[in-house]
Image (cartoon, rainbow, N blue to C red; front, side, top):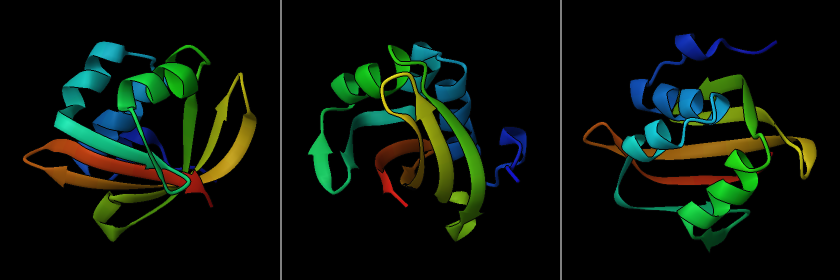
Length: 107
């Protein structure tokens, strides 16, 4: 059973998931803090390169199964045209209403 995006607890994380699912690159960039960082399976990645490849050019989509840590940690069924579907964990650091860091990996 997934959680509707509009019911996610943290408004910044909600905006992040909404931008990913609507493939809205402008809204996605707007939710990130200047100099935001990320990691995938424990390795730091370039956000622009990673999101282009894993989200925007491959039709990425997040179905949120569960949230914890006030909505800053999500368990997600993530799918894209490259890898298909996988269960992933996403952890967000939010400062001043922007995502300053997110970490994702297999759950």
